[in-house]
Image (spheres, rainbow, N blue to C red):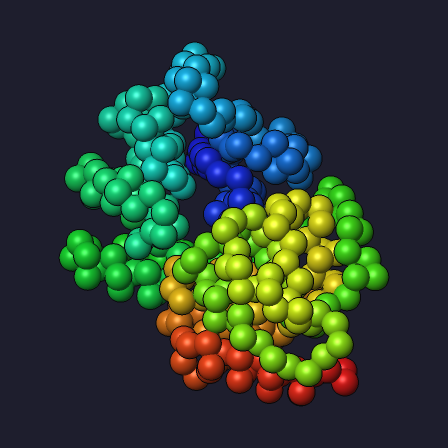
Length: 319
């Protein structure tokens, strides 16, 4: 076994990045996937037959203990049979690595968020322990590399988001959930305060119907629901719905106040949809590889972002 790749996660940019690495590495590697996303596990097994060992990681604390015991019994012999590379994608996975792997193993730690928006103490502990053990550190952008260097005086390697996502898989089953429900602007994904949805609350473009769709789980600002131009759908978007959802809009909006990256740049390029984004350093970096127009606001502010939305609306609405 040349490489063993673990992943714990369900939503967000992490699963997409993990699947992207499969496309780049699967010719030379075998994988063990640990995931809470059963849909992705089935997709992996279909796209990479005879190369994937799968295990569905439970999520509650008691189930976590039982899950570790199951992995220990099932995979320890497999994991320790050869000198392999382990790529860790999540702090919780680090606990598994400490218990499962002998010291001789070569561990590469992938850090998705150097300055995480959630679970910051756990992530910080994970980063420091990884450095203490001398594991190889990999981050997803040059800007993240700079931040890591400033924090720890160590320059990590960089592995940029590749241009592959599982939505192009031959085994991917598209569900036409949004067929005929067209909208101009779209925001979708987990709703978090750092994603800046409050910046669009005062949207005032002339229209007789909603022109913005906000869809995702999380605490959505009340001011969005009070604006008749904004349609709020507080629900989870399944992977199979994403092509239909993106096909229903003309422009993706990313009014983020901070970010480490966004998989929406990949999605926009795949489905040929322009982007409006705030001028965060990582977004500027990602835009260089984008295959679609990226319209940046001048500042990370409500007035600047709304002005950019109005400009793009006037530019593209006749298209």
